[in-house]
Image (tube, rainbow, N blue to C red; front, side, top):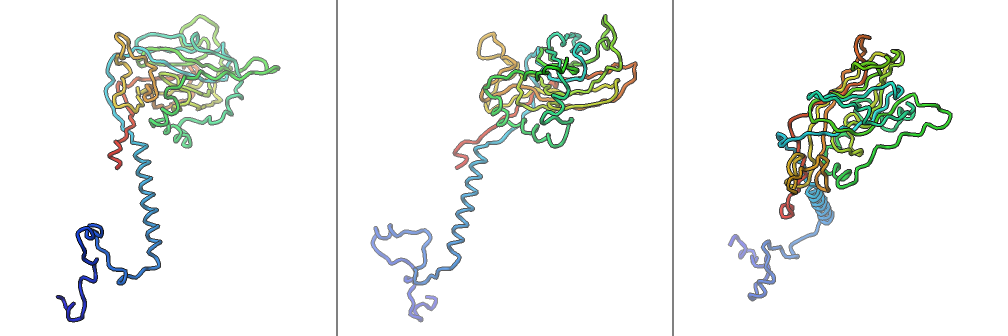
Length: 343
């Protein structure tokens, strides 16, 4: 057939020799090979095999790591349930004497909180804070990456999941011979209504109608350093948009205005995390707003914009934070497919 017989060739010479049933099973090959007599080794065959092994190993490891890290999903929903209180955490330094500053919170419900009586005010020196590592102006590009890291589930749970919350750092010691500090550090946490509100720092005798001596206008200086501004449980290891930012001015009458949009957020690895205002497993026991464990963190994110400018002497200068609570809940969930999917 095909001239094999005319040339003295036998087609069986190109395959394994026929044998018994056991021999056929032993030598069975779905892809028959040519006899070594009719093959010739190349000089690059071994290198090609090694290259294919390394490529296959690299692809296998990268696929395993991608499966192990999982992926994130972002789910927006209307926040259900009824929430009443929200914690505000503040740590700010202003280059004015502590007794010359007034701090107040007023919300849309008409409640007014004398924050100056609830927060701690320590005399300090501006130089102790202005050169602090990482201090920057709002929206400085090189710090955007750090803020981006604190929006991923793995990083957030690794930083604060199941850990005891830290307190605010102590104010640096003034030292002997330095006199009283000419700046004031205002820090602490306070509870407020979970509604739209204003948080502002003004000078003594300016702002609300209060009995007291008006402060000399030449002593006004509302430059400031914000070490911490967050909503919800105090997690100092998480970086918020206004954390470690500063703003300075030479004008005595200057108004700093920050507009904040607060979004309740859940970071979780659990397929069905509890809601911030949903009931807990205990009867008649609401879930605490600072609930957290190794797999779930309930907190708040916010976006910040600033509009600051000099004002006339008829306008109240100061530092004003206007915050609004968005009626949505953001759930950031880290998920991983089953092991069979990887296979």
